[in-house]
Image (tube, rainbow, N blue to C red; front, side):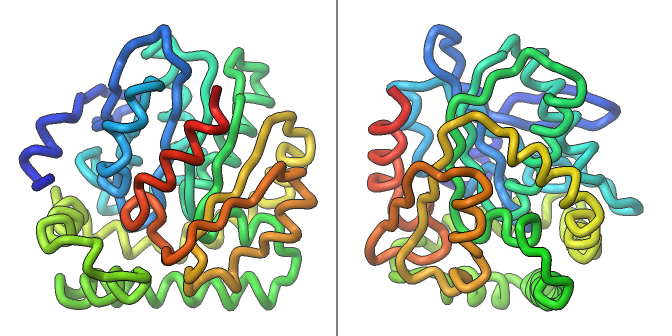
Length: 287
């Protein structure tokens, strides 16, 4: 799937002053899955699972503001509060009021604010299931300021490095895969083109703002997560190099996670490396 083919699958909406690019497979009679991607990526991370998922579900995958084909503000940080408001307005516009969520990393932070806005404003949006992969909710549930600072510095450094060139981006992505041959050169180049699109590499200048916003919002989010009444699952790769930062046990206690699924011979990018196995787990749980 190259850049042009992927772009042609997207739709556009103007929401809260931003152009939002998204995929919506339609068919409103099916259960709906909302996918929220991570920082430094885009909806393209899930291009290998869309066809299989849409056999059974309506799949909505937006590019968050600052990423992919959506608007890319370069002179200010588009906060997670703003991201959540965009997602909620998108669902309202699409007349969707019941969803399951698949998310990872930065996307799980956006999800926290999304859930907070729903609860605070008593919005009629019901969350049936949540699927967390990769480094999800690490800072939110970690009360150690030392650990938070360590992770913040790590993420800021990583994102600034990989934005320097395609070569560094490719090296970073492949070294976090169990089997690098599973990611083609076309997929790597398409991911890079989506990052660069519309001056998008400047978004990486705000990587540290993400961690700071989490630290400032985590207590508010923790209250929401503790009150959450939904089925929550981890879906992880067994060789994820960031697994030490996942803080899975604390997250399990907080969210009352029903089950953790570990996909063998898989690294950080579950939906890219083992799409069939990933989809199989989703289909078994959303019935």
